[in-house]
Length: 434
Image 1 (cartoon, rainbow, N blue to C red):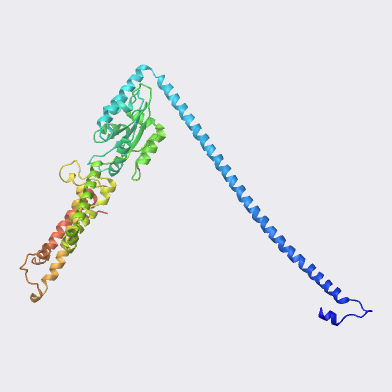
Image 2 (image 1 turned 90 degrees about the horizontal axis):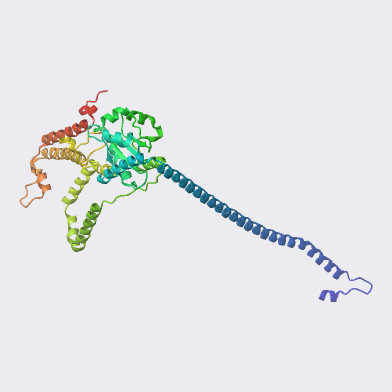
């Protein structure tokens, strides 16, 4: 402003300086306006993109909800249709049962009543059959019940380890069955030891085999071989090592259309015993904790517990728990302790094998210890204790006899090899033939 006052234009000159200033300002504004407009457009585009993304997410969620509702409705329709089909089938069965002649129905009901009495008397709910009862209640008609027949060989002389492994699952299935139905399913056992005639008739050379025999209103009495061969293969199930309770349940439900709810039995005597033992341990720790803490100073209890654990593990203690093996068998002599099959064992036989293993190891350790002690000079040997001695001190003071220990180890090892040869005769005490 001061400059404009100092250099005022003459009367004849034009005022160009203000005009130039205004022109420059307009140019600058025109140049800056597009950049500002672009920033505004970018912000608007971002906002619109966010709105579009949110809209797409909402639409996708709506589609998923509609899809889920549609699937749920379809599943409900399928359930209703299946229920209606089952109801229709049941009505047909009931109508068919009502159309059975009275004489045939009376005979079939008598068979069901007899089988129900046998189930009530059996602790395992399995009906053991003889050749005559097999022909009467499984082979001959009429019968309105399903028969799940287990051809097995659980006798000691047959050495069928799979038969013993499958038996607990069969017992659990039999205890889970509902025997009050109009067409019940009975679990029956045909053991080769008492039914060699049946095995020969159907030409069975292996076990176990499961057979589903359906109901029939026919009064015919076919041959045992004829009925067995006439049934399709889908009614048979050859057991193997991996078969379990679920496989048997599915096999039964597939044919009878009956859903079986498995019953898990609780041994309350064992549970009560564990509760009492746990209570005694807690009470002992509470009232005599200081005395129990002093037991840590003694090494003999720990040594004894280690020996028990070693014998239990070497004797297959975990195998006995998992497989639920019996403690002893029904035979006489060694057969009562050692199972004849190579694939399983009794609890007593496992403990004997564990003790023999411990004996061999202990003899080898004592042989080594006493052999080193026998070569020590006279001055380096310990003097005898005059005070009361512990069992470990008495063992250390025994006279060296490595030869006797070697003989004991050989004797115990021979017994181990003899037991294995008894269970597997082809081993021949280690002299295996090629």
